[in-house]
Image (cartoon, rainbow, N blue to C red; front, side):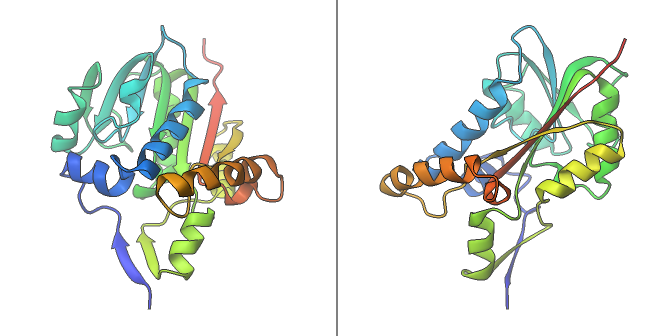
Length: 226
């Protein structure tokens, strides 16, 4: 029987969230954060404004070069995010209290899988952004997720989406997403394991037949608003 891991636990503890979910302070955790960060930075411009939807404590967006507005339902998470972002808003990701086309970019990182109405959240992100919508989710088909599920008996609930599911959600609301798979999820931690993992990571990202097993799904769409 699979052990159930409730992903929603710990959302009131910023330090615990970063230690458990991101594993910050460990070689693997720092590697994952840097891989995510490098992947996103190429899509951002210094003079832009960005809304980080479901930002948590702004673990990733704290290092973005643009003006960051962090939004989240959790007051403890926003208290920490306030020290890292330019502004914070407490709200539901499915009902953003923000004017239409009021930020340049709307961004989310591993928030989409937690909401019940995923297309509603994406529509809200589309509504408030002028230039781009960026979705960055962990991939439930990644080598690490499959290893944890079938060899370690760990089940994450709710589950992360697949690349095709993310693409489908975006197409359904009228976006034309560009998809990139980011292989940032090593199966094992430790400095030695990471050295061995890097060429494997490159292979997974580069090979058409293996991309679907990469750790992260980076999907982004440009908007045409006047």
